[in-house]
Image 1 (cartoon, helix red, strand yellow):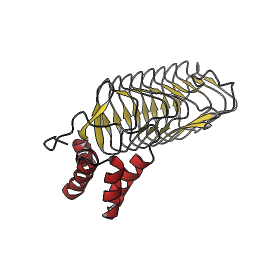
Image 2 (image 1 turned 135 degrees about the vertical axis):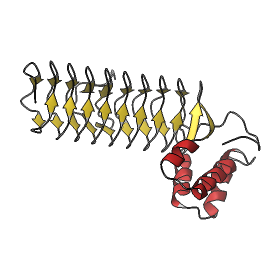
Image 3 (image 1 turned 180 degrees about the vertical axis):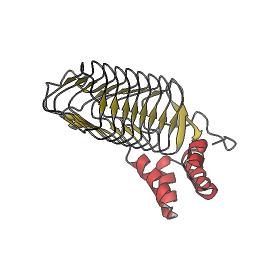
Image 4 (image 1 turned 90 degrees about the horizontal axis):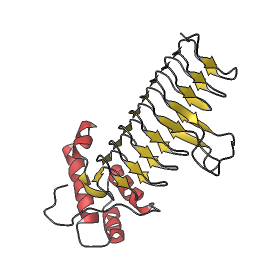
Length: 263
């Protein structure tokens, strides 16, 4: 059902069973797929919204990037299926640098959270209230970004990462890790998240061993990565190593380095 007060662009493509609330604005070149519900006063433009998404009141999706270089070039935002977007969330479309802001399936954006232009957000990501991604940030699958977290532009957040509330993140956070503080430092592994997502005790033990070798062995990070590589690790450890090797901004390090640290 589309409310009589909603304003719908002639160029919008909307599935027959989509629900659109009062005073919502569905702007140009928007695609909204089956089963999605859109709340009152929401604005969506230059965006593709997947199936069975729930978008609450006063969200702004696909609106122009907050980038002074942007000159209204044709860019987009694409969101996957089963996402939840709460009140007053802002999800900006891309710039010419990447052309698109990408959001995966099953994400949740709590009230007042923000995704800047050209970001790439994986599947199952949760952004809590007032969490903020600057432009060009990449967030891996099933990362949790707690309330009031601010992430610097071009930073990468790995898979299964947990960021504590109020963290200021200026460097990459590797897969599986937990970080917090200003400026954010590693405080170990996201063990609760790994268990929740089906990692076995054996796999978690291997991840712990890799973490200790990299951050707690007294050798350089480069030497540690080579040492782990030489042991022919399983794919998920290989991905952990690759993430660190490919870092351009540098990776976040632990607060403390001690053999007795809990990870």
